[in-house]
Length: 322
Length: 233
Image (cartoon, rainbow over all chains, first blue to last red; front, side, top):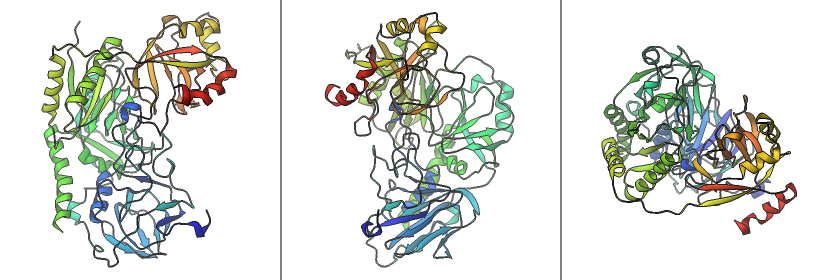
């Protein structure tokens, strides 16, 4: 595409970063056809950015992993960067995270060395306007569709934006107080609901799972984190019949090393499931890198659901109040 | 032995309903029946259902419906005595070019059982298969049960790329890869039909609970079917 044909309203990708994809809250309703949900790994951070900007929760943003892209804005708009601190700069000036910032046409957004976390979300006023497929704009890598042609960004890509009507930066400066951020940390303890197949594992195996630490290996991506630690031994060697997989499922292959399944997981699988990480704690997992260590703590359904309502309820209440 | 259905939390926003511990048509049909009931009669707070061989995973929104309420709903449906509505089986006819470049493992399967390739084809096309589940990859239809004399173990190391339309045997099951993906089933043929199309609603040609019957076509007809498929199917 030659420059004169470029629409006025868009973001130009000068450098794509290590791994940057368009994501929203996922593509729901098609898992029975083998189509995974995809969606932001840290759905809380994406939603916080969207709500700060006054977007709907369904708006799409960019999920930026480890090292960020170099982006040029071809229009005035408002952005918020949430999640990991990947050292964002606008025309060389540091940008605060979790805060609405106004961006003028021609500005360059860059990222520096990673400070903390793994996945940052760039949300934009109105959301990234790629066409939705099956009700979602999320990039589905396995299916090669969604987002931008179902793939990570590359240099030269153009991301369409809706025209931003805000002249004055009345939203600029709006910020999420630190008390409402998830408790991101390098070596978090994630709460789990045991089962549905915890009884496939020996007492020692279950104890190892709940008392030792598991290191995230480099073979980890949006599909899932392969963990390494004390093997989780089996009590029953019976094979499991393949069943549907929830987000946060912890399956254990025969080698006893658990895998934490995330947004790009397969829809069904046949390894026994020792536990499922609760939805309130999945954002913490999303911000961990290979080499970080995870611990797991059993919780109850009631506590898990209360934690989820708290996290999201506080976010929504705060944003309605300002 | 009668298996008591199990209702188990799969995390804080999903429930697994286990109806059996076997891959059997009767259990699988019960899965699809329960999925239908849940969809027709209980939409509030039920986000999505993934039917599998002998279980269903139900995603729910705890802000709208509690674990116990979903559980009660399922129990009631399971204990309902009303006769099941008759739903005529949907049988989908699948043209397949067997062997050669389209089915690189046909010879292996034949030799493994001391059969000829032609015999494997005859046996594979001799019956109707139930689509137990659609999953693993977009549109992938896993069917059963394959006649024992051609059941073949999966590859020790999966292929990194299996072409879309490939028909394989994996143990007791047969199935079709709807999109290009990695895969470990023994490939005996390929269908020219498009089994996954983003522009269709739903995008998958098969849904769980359908039936399939394969028929053999000559290699030279492969492209013919590709051209005609929109009109015929």
